[in-house]
Length: 271
Image 1 (tube, rainbow, N blue to C red):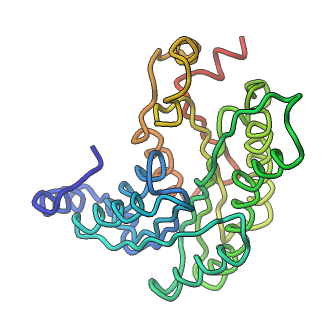
Image 2 (cartoon, rainbow, N blue to C red; image 1 turned 135 degrees about the vertical axis):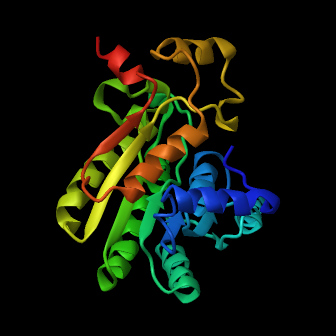
């Protein structure tokens, strides 16, 4: 588990120092959509490896405060900023608060996003724009602000959350707008890597099937079919996805890549 109560944190810190695992020490990381699920796991893992963390959410203030509390219990530093990242003024407030509190920025994880099912023939322009706001434009707006701050410092890392649904042959019909937005995130990642190199490295993670409350209303037969479509025949945990984000936060020789963590789903689908 990623949780680290204060009583055991000294032992964890000792082990991490011994193994040289505090390589995010004093790094400042903004992790969007981090009040729950994958974002929460990333925030806790980054903190465990020494980062100072900015937790964000559009609505889940209770969850955001709880993540900050968990990080504090482990002896690390974090703040929570509520923000709608599709709005430029709220993005500006998020990064102004980050710089005011921590003094800079080293890592941006663009994890905020959501999927709203909608049959294509019933969809509207408003639905498509809303999906792109949540999954692409928030990523773009945050990256603009973050890159300006990073270029004033020592550079940094931008890591975007795409999805297996953003890979060309695995988009899903019922969430077509979401799939298209996540595909755009992949293209944006690769092009932004060209734009910001060599000071800022830009990569993405494409998670597979992670069992979260988002699947609560999905019929069991559909969930079973999803898992049967993987090679490992199980759900991936949010903690396993977080490990991919940790790798990219630490890697200095990787940019413009999409790290797919899907238990072999896309490989099996390509047969």
